[in-house]
Length: 239
Image (cartoon, rainbow, N blue to C red; front, top):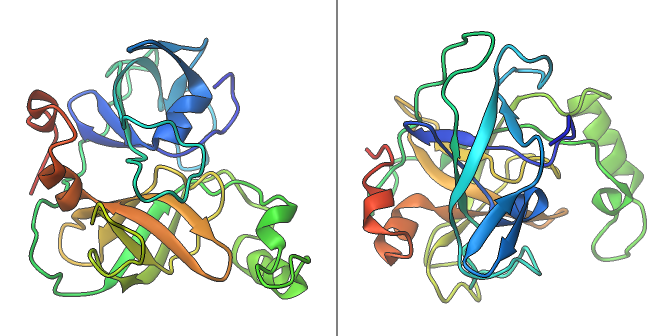
């Protein structure tokens, strides 16, 4: 927005991108049942998030989870939003093809996953040890080894699922799983894909706790919850 990086999104249908509701709250204002976009909201698919060649204008918010995201680690709230985006731009660049969302409720054949997104430069809170609430230099050193000072660009972060849907404590909605891929602020709205053929999107990353866990909404569980309107679900790409 106005050149500022507020999160990550990915294509899930013709002219549709998925991200988190708390990302949507940063670029749009809810007035009653309507959402009003702030000025100059765009999504840039460039690997470095730079330039205008792969930048597309966001047209409107077509869906957001019902509850405001006061605490991003509140499993009862669906931290998901879908925007409609213009599919052409001044550079005449091709709009990316949609990723395939997994609707399978079967146990995954592998726990290996990847997160694809744009991690932002960490603030002090990201370097704090959750047990001491003091800056942990080992965390800072490790992030330096991974990212250097190169933030705000696209990264593919490998990892594994820790807790499957249905095993995460306090997840009464049964639509959250945890993973250990490296993420930072800016990764909000990243896709979590199975590290298998075709990389189906298993989840939507929405939050993390330092040295503890990262959290994602399972696409199959969100679909089964019937929280999204059927006509919107049918516009998304599923496998």
